[in-house]
Length: 224
Image (cartoon, rainbow, N blue to C red; front, side, top):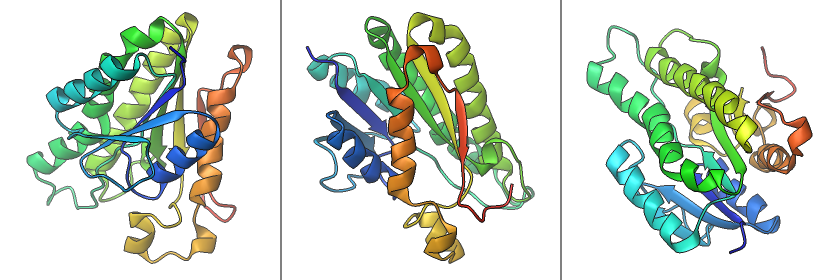
């Protein structure tokens, strides 16, 4: 079986379909996993609640049974919350963590044994909040910090076994994304989704002697 399967968990937003298109053009068969179908961007779509480990395990096991081990897994799902710490409920905090971190753990836990047989690439979509906990971002930053830690641990444990694990810090708003609309930021100050997708593809194509673990991407005018 040809090892050209790419699974994108968190298939919606501006980036999910763009990643699917870039991978499709590079010869991959893309499967999207999300709660809602983003349209016809994916060759196959599997509905799943990525905040629920049992749902994740069921969805990914189903994909593996039909296609075998993926060459690429991209965990792109996130639940975004801006709220004062005092007004952030325990339920909200847990909901963000479940989508942003626990879902990633469950996805990798399900596909990793199959990927180890052939090698492959696992990419995690981070955010500005992966390295900076700003005011009103207690839940989101906590979850993204944890995702970054998960990526580092996996890279050190499974890199020597042929799995390229990389963390992409998206340090800015994606053009056409929900956050851009929420903050009314002009496109010129945002990251083009297609340019961002090419960075993911470059990571996937890296030879094993020159792997990158983490990159941060921002528009030219972005502050950091």
